[in-house]
Length: 362
Image (cartoon, rainbow, N blue to C red; front, side, top):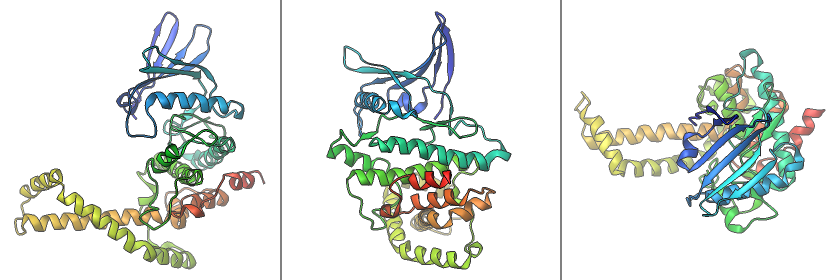
């Protein structure tokens, strides 16, 4: 995210700027202060920006303050110190306690500790999210910056509730936006019905959490995307191979049709055609026409995107074997729970983390 982490000291107060590129673009600032008495606080500044997201900046920071106040007794979120709306109503500031820990994208994991840290983070993040869900709160926007953990990953705090949904104080339009926000998986493409309900928000949250765990593992393992790692069907046990092949055949046509429509639109895009023309003109092989070259690009794009879609869609079947190829061995209960959460059919995902939490305590 391009975190600057610039540190300055003025009047005995140490100030660190954690504002990233995305925050600056969205007219936001994230500033950490160490006061003269040693206390550390965290301030989020937001200017008014009415975008096309779930809510504008000022609504978001106000909503976050309300949610954090509701979650104060859970022990897994920062406590609110102050929420201030400036007189011109174009800016607001939320001040909270600064909590310890590193976000998952900044956590350093030693090679020999990877498996244990991965397992710990899966459990601790699930336990913290469950406490939040028990209060009727859903985060909507979960990513590697959502969770702050200690070095071993056994303790987890949760931050950033600007897009959160409070089931006790929400409306139909807000729920609809939360369901559509960064649509995950391919429910519409695969024919699964997604309703604009709190249950759909929860089902999506289970998937997003699991995908965030995989993003974390990918990052610390040095691969771009676990779902796209090399994989051979013949490596699967026979019963799993049969399940995998049957599933792939059942969804291939839907995905291929979708990808083909997308590729055709991309080929017709004037900007893309202009880029393709430059590539074509730089080719040494002039045996094909520009139109034939465009068809080549479209065919290649369809093939690559179809493969990526099928790999992602089958993670609930192949995750164990993809992880093993990377030298990652998770406890069976954690692995199976992740697989359930990654199911493309939202109705088959767990409705809470309690199954995982109970298994961990046995």
